[in-house]
Image (tube, rainbow, N blue to C red; front, top):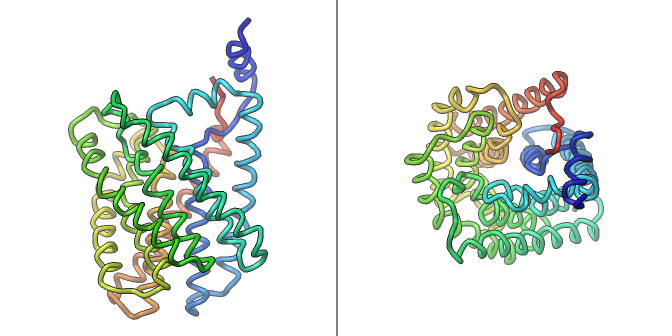
Amino acid sequence: MSSSTQNVRIARRGLSLPVNYFAVALGTGALGAAWRTGASKGMAPGWVGESILAFNAVVWLVLVAVLVHAVVKYRAWVRSFWEHPARTCFFSLIPATTAQVGASLYPYAEAPALTLVTLGAVGQLYFATHRIAGTWRGGYAPEAASPVLYLPTVATNFATATAMGFVGWHDMAMLFFGAGLISWFSIEAVILSRLRTLTPLPRGERGVIGIQMAPPFVGGNAYLAANGGTVDWFFLVLTGYGILQLIFLMRLLPWALEGGFSMSMWGFSFGMASMAASGIRLVSVGSLGLVAPALTVIGTAFLVFLWLGTLYLAVKGRLLVRPS
């Protein structure tokens, strides 16, 4: 019996978490960072953001432990994600959340925090080299160009820029922000063309369309982290595009939920949490009137919805999946 066949047979006897579940840590960590900023602006008690960040650190550690276990026990299953033209993009969430957790740890343990931020930055660059540069040789399937394609070079560079800005590396943060910004501009038309002209995303996976609102809001917060927190016209431009994406996605929300709540809905999380952070920044400078607090309320409420949906799946025994 070949080792890969044996791996698959062993996998069928157990349960695990797929790598795309790292989106839970990405979105929750972004919400914690938003409310840490809110506390610094006198808009919330300090324990709110710190509690979310501490909880997210536990979530991230659990996900890392489960991933290591899966690599050891369900190697063929993990390899199937790595080799899939679209699902492989979710591996970029691992270094992105590593940098994010590092930034959240920075006020408490500087050396470990900087180590995690550096590991996250190096890791995401390595994965982008594997995933994106590899597609330049041709043969890439157009159907694979779903919104998950933003993850390896857009979301990760913005997440790294934000983390570097939080630890005080502003020049490096601007470099990573620029990498994410131009990458976003270069691939958005490809993704929108796929969504408009090819077969619809399958039920159960439609939540990934929520990633569409991440680039403007996540990018906007990365820009603020890099420039020292100055809300200017460019940040407002990004916020405006983010609000447009929000309106579009609320129109499509019933369609995304047509097959019921699934973990793919966490595709909305990074954008929604970053939108909440954008609202906090705008409120702090008295910009956009009632629009600013609305962004924070909607973004925070959506993360609560995602966690309630996740708990529902756990109660129903549908959170863990059987590797195959």
